[in-house]
Image 1 (cartoon, rainbow, N blue to C red):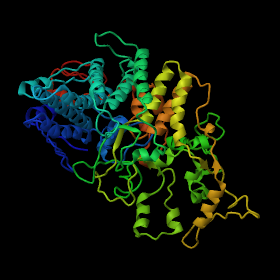
Image 2: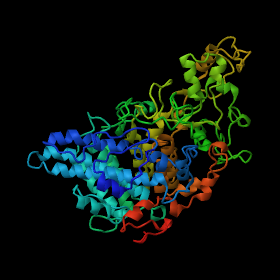
Image 3: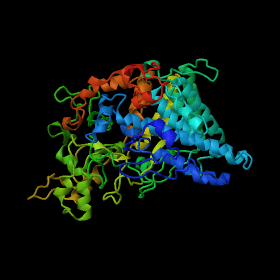
Image 4: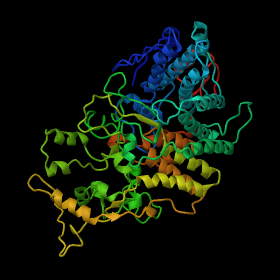
Length: 640
């Protein structure tokens, strides 16, 4: 994460080129804020790329940005990071207004917004030499990005200064640096206004790249904004907010508005679920991603770090810094429909003996905190129908696999078997890098899918359910589930290589050792292929007759399985009023204690305080008109 030693006012007054120094690399992509342009086309070519580059700023949409500081932090998908130490307070809810990363995030967001504002001002200088048809699509892109930045700001901080002045004179910069907080409801009005313009004037995503703002992206984000505006005041939201005339808008009205926008995306036919879940995260445009942040490495200007932070193993070989561990309760949720976890479905999620989900002893050995040897030999993935489990949870050591693939380690049955890790070593995954990996850290090619069709379907289901159309909601949830389910799985450990052979030959399961060869791979493959059972999709889809509360629980769970590690979870829990319940359910064995005991998280968490961050103390000092969040104290201007 970048360290900015100069506060926002200094940057605005003396750094209008916004040249930002990273302790690891330079991020001066096309910084042309103060440059002069001879034509409108020259302006667009020279400036738009630099505006999109702000999405790749270290505190924004890199994996070490708000995904690692706010969105996927202090919740129930993985543990707190072991390093760097600056991140730990954000996971443990022990941060303060003086926390370095909080100040850096605020600064980088407002730098990005100021770049957009000045670009819009520069566009207006070419009104006499360009047409509306030329200007409006470009303005739409910029306003979409401004809305995106303010959407994060209002979710994270609540009442923030609303900087929209398009001038770049010293007087304008001074005025911007001394703006008071706007209310969150007022900030949302600006977001809506920007997105409505982008929706009406943007170019189409169809036939274009996902990392370019489009009218469909604006409409999808508008639906997401309306949905988030239903957050109650208890959870730091605006409870519907206000309209342009200042009148109150009810939560039900916002659900209606969200449903309208999201439904339009669905019925447009422009997007579809990719047949294979893993293909969504391949570095290429596809039919599911509506808007993404593009990373085109290997190149130290535009490479990304997705995959560097999540996963087991060293930084180069398929994995990460290995600083996180997966929450085992969450990881095993993928196994529940197959009967490997809580097979009786009696509502018991915790086994009193080990504080972990009750498991089926036919497949899992709690004593070793792993699958039984037979399952490991066959491959646990063959027993789990949900493909998302393999994509999202790393259960092997990729650096050891890379050494085998390179030829540095002998490719033996024992070495292959020892790749398996027990669940105290399972890690978040998702952004799967090549093994062996050719790129250096921070130089990856994996894009960040900010808006995708599965998210739209699940948000539509949430809105429909809130509006009393629970049966309709089920259809969209089931669409997402159906995509993830394999056609065939193993439902028991095969006894015979081919149960239909005469006579059948028993499988002898032998764990390889230094002195003993294990069961031959050919034998295991034969046993797998001859014992696979077609999945009954009805065992995985939502059943009929769910109440609204039951449907909401199902949607929240499905969003976690589908969208984990994509920066959606904390916002979901805040919006649906479940954040405190989820944190209170954390327990000592949620993850390996040595990697991140989650008990301190629940002890430190306070709902009223931690649904927002404090305004950075350095900004309070510099801006006499800026109020602090009352949960974190006050300022000379008071608190909100």
